[in-house]
Length: 69
Length: 171
Length: 272
Image (cartoon, rainbow over all chains, first blue to last red; front, top):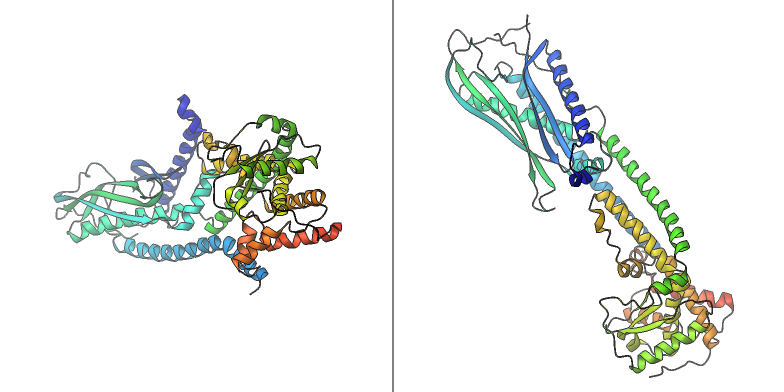
């Protein structure tokens, strides 16, 4: 589908949704890790997306877990 | 050996060989993975005392003496089993769950190596930690097939001033 | 800022699905996809057969020649004789809509090919190898059998679906389907189709000569020349499209006996 869009141009709605869902999942996992350490906040969060293989992408979210009063 | 047996052996070789390859690479890959994970867990436990944070500015109460860039990187190759599963995933879409442990290992190992780099030079803390992934292309397959994945972790290591070094607190 | 040494929970970034389970599901999905394509093949072949009856095929390809053919002069005596033989055999199949044309390919390998539209190509090697007219008649009859069973159109349908399957699964450009008629129809008749063509050929030979002596003599000669025990290479036999020679001989013998055809009679010499 995206291959055809390459000809026509415009937003790739399918990809957008896929990456958004994945980013949310990655963020959730980061928050879960922070919570398991006893933190109640994550600061300085950064995101990174990279292409791992043809048609496969990796998304990660990382930050510093802190306990704020 | 008569024709029928030969023919049966031939069919077996033709169809079972790829499955055998898949299974053996899966088993070997899993063993390597488990060993790596336990090594990672051990080393993470050992350097738990060192603060490693992603703040882009140094916290005010740290008084840094020396500072330097520290890096840690690792290259992990994708075994045959993972590549096949990812290839099938490419057909149907969805999460490639077999890649997750691979990238988890790579990330944690890269961060550990960065910490070890800092510790070996006598630094006390690392801030502004960033992570970067890139894939290494293979020479066959017109540079499209993946040979491996490189994970890079880098940050600023600092020697903390006396009296203000954040100490470990057990709770 | 106080540093509290803590380790996060292990395994957050790893899914709990077992890799073998994931692989199994995907492979099952691929198998299901393959089954769908197989069914599609059968359906499509029937559709193509319906829309391209033999008459239309004969009409469409009536003057088509493959590109890599090195032909001989039209006055070549072997060409004339072979054409006459084909015409004679075709008379025994009156409903045939084809006007069969014979061409001789300048190759040393003994081979005979049937192209859509009624073009039969025999190689120089085959004509050199043939010892009697009966042998040649059987080979030509076999090719006529392919036309009778509409094997070309079936192969076309199969080839198109296979190309589509690979295009979908390897995500290559759809335009690469490039249906080359020669490639698709020619080289890949299945084992069953070859055996069916054999039977048709033998029936024609029996009608033409009144007996089937020496019809499969060429096969027997290849057996003797290769000197290998008839069941070696059983692996290759199953996976190749041409049924093993010994198997073909056996089936032809059984057919002749079943039909009560005479196994003996005067052998006709080649016309050159």
